[in-house]
Image 1 (spheres, rainbow, N blue to C red):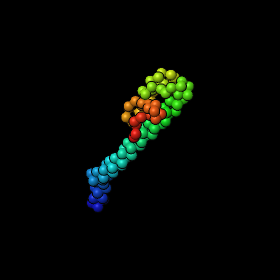
Image 2 (cartoon, rainbow, N blue to C red; image 1 turned 45 degrees about the vertical axis):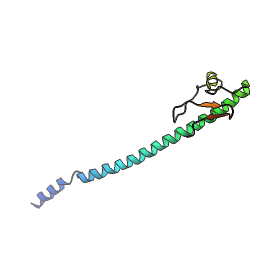
Image 3 (cartoon, rainbow, N blue to C red; image 1 turned 135 degrees about the horizontal axis):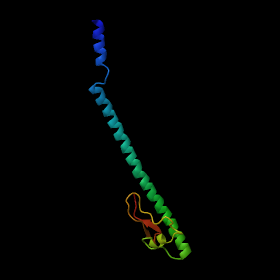
Image 4 (spheres, helix red, strand yellow; image 1 turned 90 degrees about the vertical axis):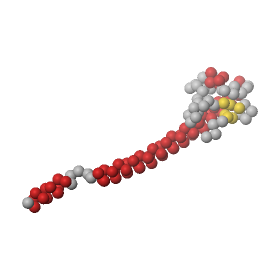
Length: 115
């Protein structure tokens, strides 16, 4: 009889209880929320950094255009984009806002994109 009782108690304890499963699922949910928040933040930060890189590259290319052509490129940079010597991959767009870059010849800077 003692042997049968021990076997019954042992057979009841083979699986996980609902409380244990609930605790694990809750911990996984909290961990996933933290990780997704950090990944999303890093993605935005990377897009903003890429925008700054594009702005700097376009300003340098505009200065080279001025040196070679004697005038600044068009404000929408279409003339510079048409010449593969300056922008071989075409005119980039802001990776953060998907808006085009514009050039101000009086300040010699890319306008907007103050992320």
